Image (cartoon, rainbow, N blue to C red):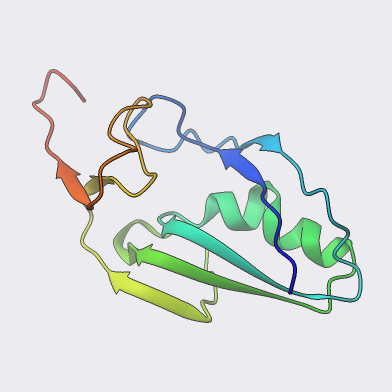
Length: 123
């Protein structure tokens, strides 16, 4: 087994996806002829996985298979159908932080998953 990291972002400092995904770091290891499992923190709209880069690009790079594993699945916001092989937890439509997930680069360090509640002036 090998592992590598890719970094993509569609949120920036916002609480809603911009719909435009930026690739911050590409893979270093070739995936041709390999089974690939994408491990993602949260599946929200599905845009980051499907339309931006990950699944289609890995398939175009001749991966034998591409699977998806997520810690958190938020189906209420889904815009794109993504087939999951593994899901940790199903969650409601709440903005969550912790375990690496952030709001405007804050709260990423929390050793738990928390819900951020916003006032009308913050949204």
